[in-house]
Length: 325
Length: 214
Image 1 (cartoon, helix red, strand yellow):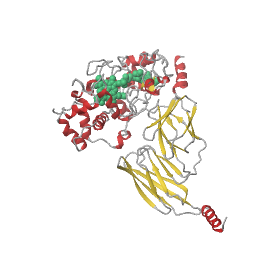
Image 2 (cartoon, rainbow over the protein chains, first blue to last red):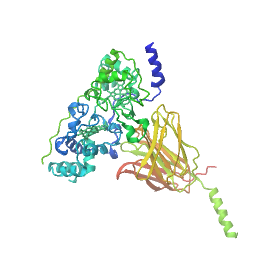
Image 3 (cartoon, chains in turn red, green):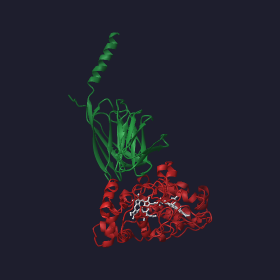
Image 4 (cartoon, helix red, strand yellow):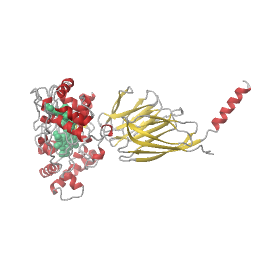
C-alpha cells in the first residue's frame, strides 16, 4: 500500500517536472568568458592568488583557508571564521565543477565566477580587503610581477586581471571520473549493487533528480527545503517573497567530502541529509511542493548514501609555491 | 496635376509592381562554440506587422531562442511548464530594464515592448538562471532567425523572396559585434564574425540575381 501511495505521489508531482538525465560533464560545454580557454599561465596565477594568505587583511587567510582542497573545498565546520575572527553567516560551499554553473553563492547573487571572486576579497567578514588595498598589497609582493607578465604580457595589476585569473583556476577544479562516470561509460562493475539501487531511488522514489539533475546534479535553481533559520536566501536578492528561504541547489559531485551540509551546515552526515528529506524536509514556511515524506526504508537510505559515495573522485591539488616579497 | 507628375507616379507604380525577388543562402562556420542564435534583417524595410507575439516556457526553458517583434508590440509571456517562472531583463548598456513578476504554472502575463528599433534584449528567469532568450525589436518583414544546435559548428540556411531593392543587411548574434553589410543581387560575400575583437567564425552569403516569380 505504501509503495502504491508513493508511486501515485511520484506520478502526481514528480514526473511532471522536467529533469535532465544524469550524465558526465563535458568540457566542451564550458562557456569560457569570450569563448577563450584560459592559458596555463593564467591558471597558475589564479591558483597562486587562491592559496596566498598574505592577501587578507590580517595576512592569515586565503580562499583556500575556507575552501580547503583537503576538506572538499569547504571548511568542515558549519560556520567558519573570517580573517578578523568573526563567524560566517553561511556554511562554506564546495567549489567543484563551477565551470558549468550559471549562478553563484547560496542565494545566486553573482552570475559569473569573475564577479563572485570580488565578494570574499572585500567582505568584512572574510578577507576584509577593499579592492584598491588588495591590489596595493599584490603590487608590494615582487614575485607577482613575473607571474602577471607571463599571463598577460605586461606587469599591470588590476581587478579584472586578478578576478579573471582566480576564475580561470576555479574552472579547472573538475570532478568527472567517478565510479558513477565509469559506470555510465559502460563499466558496469564500477558501481556496487547497493549504489546502483541508490541511483534508481535517486531518479525515482526519492525524487532527488527533480532538483539534482544533469551532469553536475544541480538544476542551478533555488528551492526552499523548509529549513527555518530566518535567512531569506534568494528571496532577499530578487525581492520576491515566493522565493523566501530558497537556496541554490548545490551540485553533488564529491559531496561525500563536503560535510557539513546545507546553507547553514545543519546536517552533519549524508545519512542525516537523507533522513531530513525522508521526513519531507524541515518545518519552515513556504516549502517547495516537492518536499514530501518519502517513506524510504533504512536500507533504501543506506543505498542512497552508497550512491552519493559513488560520485567521489580524489583530486590532487597541491598548494603552489608562493611568490617572494 | 501636370504631366511630369503623372509620369513619375506611373513609373513608381510600375517599378514597385515589378520589384523582383531574390534568394539568399548563407553558411555560418564557427571555430569553437556557436552563439546559440543569429538574427539577420534588412533594415531598410518597415513592413513587419507582428500581431500576437508570444513566448512560452516549457521544461525549464523558453521555447524560442529569439522572438521578433515590432517596436510597440504587446508580448504575451506564457508558462506551460510544471514550475513557476519569473521573467526579467536587465540590460544596462541599452537601458532596458523590466520585471514581469511571478508567472505561475499555466499563467501568462503581457508586456509592451517600448524600446527603440534595432535593440535585441536578453530575457532571463529569476528562478532558473540557466534560462535565456532574446526579444528583438525590429521593423523588417524580411528577417531570419537562425537557431543553432549545441556543438553545431557549421550551418546553412536560406532566406527566400527578398525584394531586390533591399540591400542593407544587419547581422546580430549574442555578444558578437553587430554587422551592417551590403549585399546586392548576384553578389557573394564572406564576413568575419568577431567577439571582443577576435575572429570567432565566418558567414558566407550568396544572393541570387532577381528571379521572376510569376
